[in-house]
Length: 87
Image (cartoon, rainbow, N blue to C red; front, side):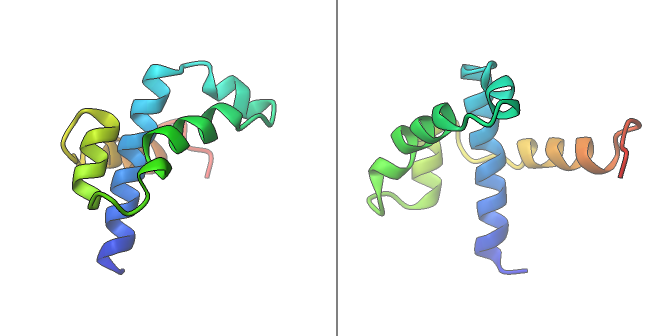
């Protein structure tokens, strides 16, 4: 696996955690097919900076936290080790 792809997954997990904590209603919006809040939040936190910052600086600016694998590990545990897994 390309290291950049892996870094992207770790960043995405951390960013998703941050966005969900700030906007818990986002899950219900997703169920209704509404992705506007997610798009506007990511646009404000990430996209508007373009390539100004390297990934580690950008994730810290976006989430107020240094990059951590904890969120990605949590995602993997919920996805693959959950007792309620229906896959």
